[in-house]
Image (cartoon, rainbow, N blue to C red; front, side, top):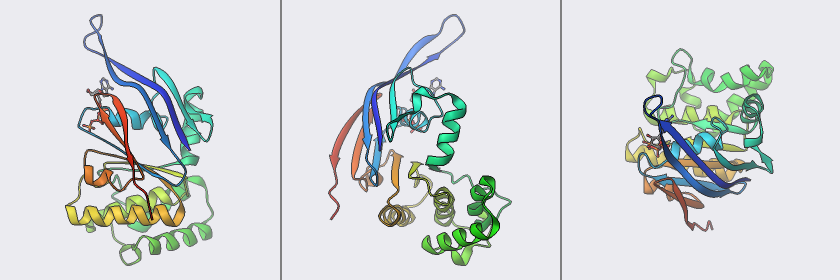
Length: 232
Ligand SMILES: Nc1ncnc2c1ncn2[C@@H]1O[C@H](COP(=O)(O)OP(=O)(O)OP(=O)(O)O)[C@@H](O)[C@H]1O
């Protein structure tokens, strides 16, 4: 479970000596229970990316706490946060961020190789995940030989391969047409059900936000909880 309490952050902007403080996050409270899909919807500039960077431990807030299963991320130093992130969090990006020189298979395998997982275990895991994400047939293709939707499937599989309990997705369908968007949202829903992974989705799109069990709305750095979707 992720719990955010009293989270505030400002950026100092402008010329040296003449900087001004711009408050970006104002006393936020947020909760993401295990196995939930949580969405944070808001306009450009409302502070969503700043919040995501703090939740994932890339940025230290001015005030407040981020508790992940009771462990306070904000009390850790940078190295501790990086190690924690590697173990616990996966990331999905709007522009996929696949390695262009690696095939779909190799892109998905890469996090396991970096973790030092033995070859036989890597193969078993990648083959299984390729099947579960519908990618087996295109596993030998390079990113530029794939559609946007296929590239995002590979991006999602790569985030999943190390089995993190939480995946942060920053505008995961922002580069896709509406039909492909639906396809990727269905994949996220099915992976959430199958593996019990918590997804935290940042978006400006109300339709994307609507797949979440718990929906937050960000407006000028303030966050309000906008209702629960009851899954049947
Ligand atoms: N490193 C920074 N230094 C100064 N100001 C920043 C910095 N990062 C973000 N900001 C400012 O903080 C505010 C919120 O930005 P943020 O990127 O969090 O919004 P967002 O909702 O994610 O927008 P978008 O959807 O366009 O990515 C903006 O006014 C932005 O200019």
